[in-house]
Amino acid sequence: MKFFFRILSLVAVLAMSLTDVAPAWALTSRIKDIASLQAGRDNQLIGYGLIVGLQGTGDGFRASPFTEQSMRAMLQNLGISTQGGQSNAKNTAAVMVTANLPPFASPGSRIDVTVSSLGDATSLRGGTLVMTSLSGADGQIYAVAQGAAIVTGFQAQGQAATVTEGVTTAGRVPGGAIIERELPSRFKDSVNLVLQLRNPDFSTAIRIADIVNGYAKARFGGPVAEAKDSQEVVIEKPREADLTRLMADIENLVVETDTPAKVVINERTGTIVIGSDVRVSPVAVSYGTLTVQVTETPQIIQPEPFSRGETAVQPQTDIQAQKTGGRVAIIDGPDLRTLVAGLNNIGVKPDGIIAILQGIKSAGALQAELVLQ
Image (cartoon, rainbow, N blue to C red):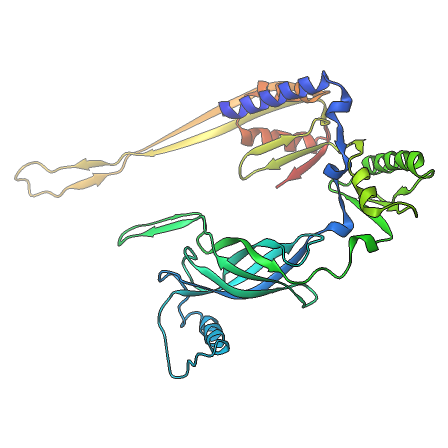
């Protein structure tokens, strides 16, 4: 609890320091940091493969028959006959292989892949992914993956206990996939540039368009950008401009950003994140909790010597009820520093502050969006 309030105090000090510096330093960002190019998005790849070389932690062929079928098909493609043979070794596992194909990736470059167990394998540690083709949503093969799988988790098991750290049925193959086919569309074939804001906001989109138009008027003699909505800004390519050089110049322009006021609450971990623009109207808050503690202290009653009695257990229960809190505090948050100071003055735990923020929102005094995770 003390650690949590120290964090809130640190946020208050940070908010106070931000108000003392120039807004150009605190609220400006490069376009490349707040927006992404629509033509430069990632593409997802997927494939089915086998991991071999496991130390008895692979799939059981009885519980995962598709693993045996895949292994037989692979051996037949290699010219090895498997008719009449049956193996019970658990050193093979069937996995799904996934990867993200980065934008403008060229054939011959490498990307990381993720492997995830499909069957009843207990660990992929020490295994090697055999050649697996990775396809896109259009069914075309864009990469081929192979290599040693790296698993960060581990599992230790004895006769009476088992210790597991992390996930042992999923891992990564760094640089394990080689790109074999480039994407159909190329960057320089585009007619215009479409910028997508990572945090959609109408004010920021308009400012991006204005900054780009100011640059275009000085460089090309006319405006080229238009904000379509809160997320997209379309930039037309001038005739005499090189698209790559144009994007390099635009992405380094500095824009004053704006974001809506939000309070993000994660009730599972007790995390509270309050934006700098959050405001609270004057409101009185009282918070109190009732704690009931039940203690069981059974007593063993022994019979007297030579009484032929039996040992008995006499239950004894102690119940204590304690009510804490109940103080009334006035919270008026014209800025982040005052809001954090008001929450600190109430002196409750993080779950209590979460309940207070939800109550303030229900009362209409929290001038921000409340996001519950």
